[in-house]
Length: 607
Image (cartoon, rainbow, N blue to C red; front, top):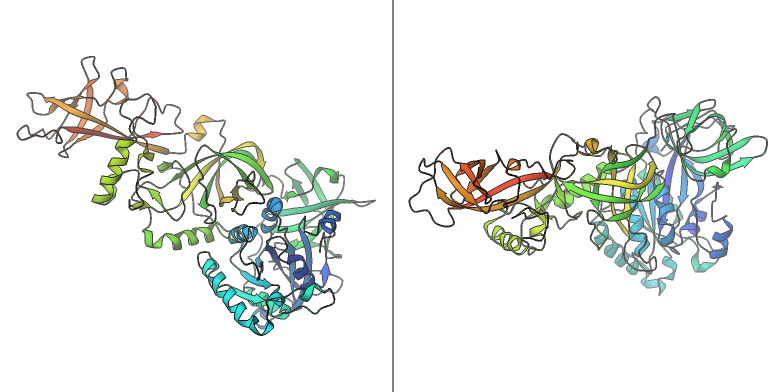
């Protein structure tokens, strides 16, 4: 959304709103855009030759229409309200183009074929739209195909009720749904149905307050096309994401590491001297090979970095049915790039989450915070985080420490931990990973809370340091019915994975539990000899100073080795009661942390 005073031949002051039009292939998006639009721009209405040949949208298309300034915006300094429609492809193979498109929108129209309901790419578009905006209207297209005609209102109400149940699980609960038919009877000359109602719904969605004034030096521009004009230079068409740009300003093309002065600019064929956030504009620069850039970014010089690793705040997408495991590689879209990245997930330690009954509300609040128009939750690099074997959704994360669960759940977790003994294979006797309770029955208490991921990209990425992130399995069958989008989020910290000391600043740990037995208590009553806590060949120095707990809850500190068979000498400052001790009382437990990015992780244990 732009809050500029547009300078044009007509001198009209125009408030521009960018509206993404998304939906499943063949849902009628392009026909709907044609019914709404009065002015066309780049690639509008499938001008692409292959689009016409294949009958589907292949690239982002742009067109617009204007309406008088509505009463709720009358206090603003504008004469007209303009909606720029961004027609996004609906075909599964073009989802990456959709991801690029949603980064420029202020609100969205989700087009649903009312005869088919929510389809695979409809769900993917809904997910992408959730990250992009909080304002959406649903166009229930092709209502003319609901027969018999006298039953149409009832069939529409039924569709609205059914879809409403799906939207209730998203940030768009209670969304407005407008029945329309962009091309009744598939006749080009037939008058469309419901278009005026759809326009009115869009107008009602426009907030009364424009964007804040642009901050100095923060210009960011999403380029969707680049082409040469003989004798003039190369034109970059796109949308101002933030800040402003004026003729003669110097801008950078960060992917090319080149800077160029702005020679001239146009908005819908009208020359302008300045463009602000939300404006769709053509920027003419000289001495640029247009073949070098098709889609990407322009910015204030030095403001968009290139990096190989980053931490992102993320949420699992509810429609994704598979696991999203750590150490796996997914396709990750960052800014206008899609590259493979290895993932390491982590979250807050057990006991620091939110209650189960507020998990959905917390997830939606976190999603709103990660939207492009908002600021994601701050990342505190100075605190500890718990390593996760995978990214979890609304089912929650199994507790790594069963003692925080209920008595029944703790027993189940202990049983699962017993079954998982020895499977981690880290060469240290008695180690058990935090994933031992992963397969415990769903009755086990769970942790709910924010999650993050360390992304290590296969190749350098150039994007804003707080860019949108979407992870997906694009190698999945594009003709299948499963949603391929797995997680979404925002970058919160850049990391160089090639620098171990920089990685080590991420305090992500795996909880480790070791079990031993008191063999005997020394005559002083405070010193015990403990066996089976470590292996004979283990370095005792790693364990000296660590605290242990007996089955009775007595606290002790490891002082050193006893003999050469792997036994330890443990001091219990408050003493050990010798009478009536059972085998369970003599059990000794060592709980500690191993930090996964610490270069000395094998040599250092912390508590």
